[in-house]
Image 1 (cartoon, rainbow over the protein chains, first blue to last red):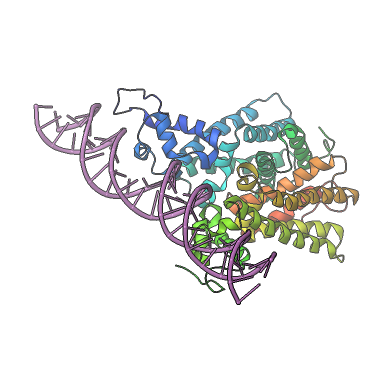
Image 2 (cartoon, protein in one colour; image 1 turned 180 degrees about the vertical axis):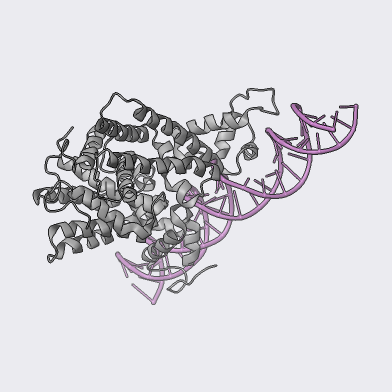
Length: 209
Length: 209
DNA sequence: CGATTAACTTGACATCGTCAAGATAGAACC
DNA sequence: GGTTCTATCTTGACGATGTCAAGTTAATCG
C-alpha cells in the first residue's frame, strides 16, 4: 500500500508539495470526506503524522488545495477576458460556460472551493481567504463592467446583481455536481439559458443564442 | 449525559419518532457531520446501536429527516399559491423569498435536503426519493405556469429555464448559508433582485420592487 | 565538530459507524 | 395461563479516522 519516497529515507525534502499533489488526486477520487490524512500519508510513503509538520490540520491541507484551485480558476477566467476578439456578450457567455465546465470537470475541487466544508463549518485559512476574497470581489467587478457595457440590467444594485448572477452560476453548478435534476450533458444549454435570462433586458439580445 | 426514556426501561415504544425529534435538534445544533448516532442515542437515553433497529444506517436516518423537511417545505409552498389574493408576480416574489427564508432559517436541514451528502455520495433512500422527486418536478411545473402566465421568458425551454430559476434560488441560498460574500440581512433585497431579473422580459415589470 | 532545530517516527487516545451475539419483554398462539 | 415467537434493546468488539505527546533522525548553523 505504500508508495515511494523521492529522497533517501528519513527527510523527504519536498513533502509539502508531494502531499498536495497526492491529496488533490485522492480528493478527486474519494471526495472531501473520503480524503483521509492517513491514506494520504500512506500513499506518499510517510508516517501518518508527518503531514502535520506541513499542515496544521486537515482543514489547513484542504485550504491549501482550495488555494490552488482558486489560482487555477483565476487564470482561466483572466484568459477569457484577455481574448479580445470576441464581442462582449459572447465573452459573458463563454465565462459562464467556463465556470460551469470548471465545476463539472472538477466537482470535488469545486465542492471544496465553494462548499460549506471550508466556509461554513471549517474555518478557512487566512492564506486561503487572501486568495479567495479577491476572487469573490472580481465577480462584483465583472458585474459592474457588464452593467457599464449595457449588457445586463443597469437599474439593479451592482452588489445584489452580482450575488444573483454568481448565485445562478453557483446554483446550477451545484445541481449539476450533485446530480439533482440536472445532467452535465445539457451544460451548454443550461448555461446559455442562464445568460439569456441575464441579457433579457437589453435590446440586442433576447433570443436563444 | 443521558436523558430520560418515556417508558418503563427496556422497550421504548416510540423510539423511531423520539430519535427523529432529537436528531433534528442535533442536526440544527451540530450540522450534518456533527450529528453522530452515538450522541443521538445517548441523548435519547438508549444504547448506541438501538437506532439501527429503526434506521438501516446513518444515511437512512438523515434521509428520514430530509423527508420531513421536504414535506414541510411542500406545505409552505402550497400555502403560497393557495393564497389567491395576491397578483401573480407577487406570488412569484413571495415564493422566492420564502424559499430563501426557509433555507436561511434551517441551514443545516436545507443542506441535508439539497446537499451532496444525500444526493451525491450518500445514496438517498427510495422513500426519500419518492418524496423529493415530486418536489423537484413541482419546480418545473411552476416554471411552466409562470411561462403560461406570461411572467417570465416564454421562448426558452421550460426545463432549462426551471433549472436556471431553481439554480438561482439554490445558489443564493447556498451563498447565504455558507456565508460566502452574502449576508442574510440582505435576503429580501437579493430575492427581489433575482425576481426582477426573471421578470425582466415582461412589459409590466422591470423596475425594482 | 558540537549543538540546535526542523522533519519525521511510533504510541496512544477519543470519536465515529457498524456488525455480531446475547438479553428482555411484549405479542401471539395453544 | 403458559409457552413460544419475535421485535426491540443491550454489551462487546473492530477498523477507520483526526490529532496529541514524546522520542529519533539528520540537516544546518555556529
